[in-house]
Amino acid sequence: MIEFWERTIKVTIDTDKCDACETKACIDACKKFARGLLQLKDGRPSVEHLTEDGIKRLGTECLACEYECWFRGKSAIKIDVPIEGLDEYLRKRGLLEENANQ
Ligand code: SF4
Image 1: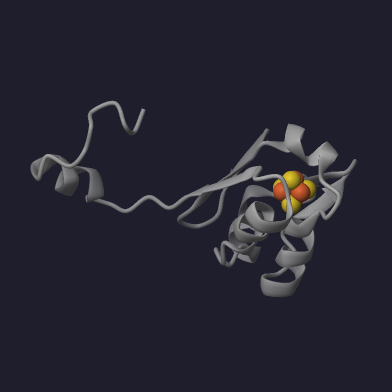
Image 2: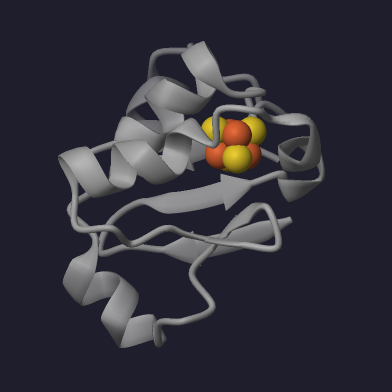
């Protein structure tokens, strides 16, 4: 499992699923639609070659890796896009279950 932050989004990759992935579509997507943040290491996507600052500098938050992984990979990537104040907004309107975000 790897997890890293770009400027405003959190990327989580369940890399145990990647061994069975034949397309490695996230890598192609990252090169094509962003700046090649993700690199393949031992058959799995990695950002080990970058510092935290390097990730933030290179990341474009384009979400292409998640999309491609869902459609051509093994659904291993989850991207969280926190929106400040959203939980409070939903809670006030009774639309947020208290355990939903834990
Ligand atoms: S496309 Fe998804 S399953 Fe395939 S290597 Fe990338 S993250 Fe892993």
